[in-house]
Image (cartoon, rainbow, N blue to C red):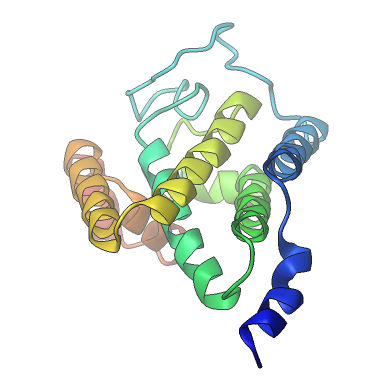
Length: 199
């Protein structure tokens, strides 16, 4: 197929900047509405919103704009960019981003279901976890978008280095990170739980 043929095949996926932003904003707004209909609280029950909350084992974790798990969501963006690049070669960056936002939003909704909340409380160190506030959930998705954009702009070695720094650094500081979170959610290990609890 000629280059012009490729352009014709993929041109209908290409949208303008305002349209792309509108689609992304619409997906994130839909996520917020669904969470609200699920009964999630808009902001922390403490009555205020902080830019950063760094105490993991507290009732305010996952209630404010950013926390230690924000770095995991940035890594989500790195990974989603890679997968979208592999699955949708030659497609618009906006199509790939929309898919990433859809997947991240779906996870945020699932994460705030009773099943996942209870599993976190039973199998991980998140004893005081009662689900995300809507502000926190939307902020997590925006952190993923940030990671996605970074992955689209920066050299691969920089993204890999940042992912390692985030995982190792956060793991060292709070004894948890994206890797450990996935392990403990899918197949909990008692020795990891004890180490995370500082026992």
